[in-house]
Length: 287
Image (spheres, rainbow, N blue to C red):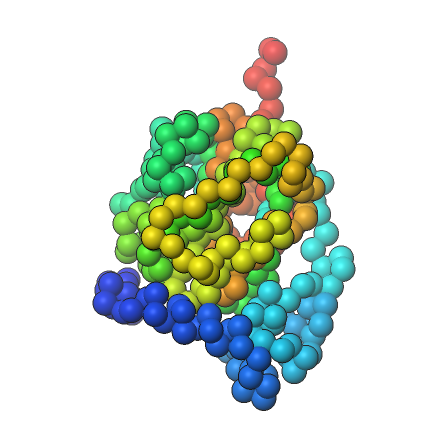
């Protein structure tokens, strides 16, 4: 199937209605029906239940409880690096930010200012900086963890579209990640500022964080902002910072000259939570 035929119907589908319907079912406790759906999902997407803290599909009261299942202790050890991968998934794109432009796919870029809810001040922090976009497929673990220590400064809910975020849609929908519904988390870290953006999608019933709970729903037509006092929300490297109730994409932004990605991190490559993601740039020779 060409990207056109994968993308074109999404402009016509009632994406928000479908997402609300899926979210209602995912929250419901429908007994045998819930268990049947979970078993079908596990088989369809080859989900590895052996690494789940609770491997029995019949033990989950709702699809959401299954989808956000925790892993067994030690299933994702943290690498010895200043930054570790925050999720299981696949790298959509990564690399330098050109001015304020983030590369999405061939022929498509979007601005950091648009991604960050129109804030020129926030976007300026990441001018000519670095980015990584990681796609979480249905079979992946769907909790997001901290790549490094961080203190939360601000969280912003940005209303938007609910296009799919799979690779075909990323190639076909201009500005996808900056037009979909998203939750933007601004952190201060020992290495400087960092933006961690949870991007919603079709069928993604909601996004949640440990300090706030479910952020959406309710969905609103306007941007909502929460500011946090210094030290109010402090997270260590590897701690959970959010979860998708059904899957999506994470976008991370860093300032210029903050990090160098490890060599095996390339577009399209699979990644796992906790593996080394980046190191501090080496000092120029002679300094």
